[in-house]
Length: 113
Image 1 (cartoon, rainbow, N blue to C red):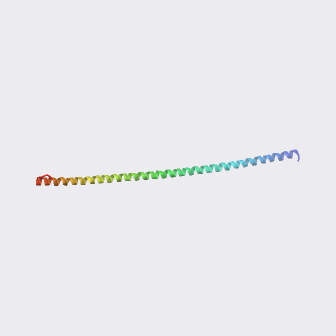
Image 2 (spheres, rainbow, N blue to C red; image 1 turned 30 degrees about the vertical axis):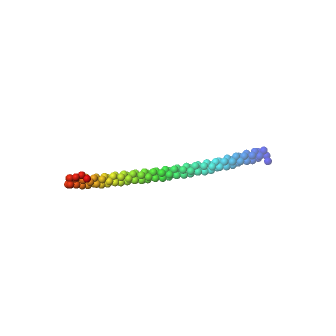
């Protein structure tokens, strides 16, 4: 083997050796970052998906119990005033007849009891 032939073999050996490892590491980091960003965005959208899921879930039940609360709130006050006026109705009804018979007997029989 002459010096020229040796130099050619030496050159192509290290040339191929260099580009072999160059493309090896190139594709290695290419797939590394590919899967890295793949799982990054996967968990990113996974996280925000469940974030907004629980957000609207909370929002839904918040307003559910909100209207539920005010429903029973007005329900309660409706019946409160209902029984309030109902009670006073019979209260005044009772006193009306009480004084009616009182004065009736008072003036009719002319005595107090």
